[in-house]
Image (cartoon, one colour):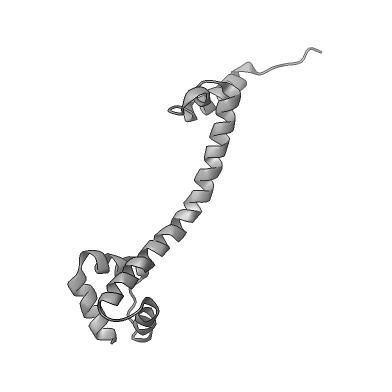
Length: 114
C-alpha cells in the first residue's frame, strides 16, 4: 500500500508557523527551518517571561515604595512591617502607585503608621 501524505495539513502547519514568524529579520521570516526554530524559541521566551513579568513588577513596586518611604524617614522594611501591623490592607501595587502619583496620600499613610 502506498504511503499517504497529508499535504493539506502539512502546508497548514507550515503556514501557521510562517505567519507567526512575520516581521522577523532575514531568513527567520521566510525559510521554513530557520523560521520554525525562531518561532519555537520565541514561544519559549514568551512562556518564561509571562512568569518573569510578575517578579519584575513586584521589584519595581518595592523600589518605588522604598523611595517614597525614605522621603519620610523610614526604610521599606520598617514601613511594610508597620503597614501590616496597623491592619492597612493595601497591596504593593497600590502603595507604589500612591508613592509615585499621589505623594500626599502616601504621606498620610506614612504618618498614620508612624
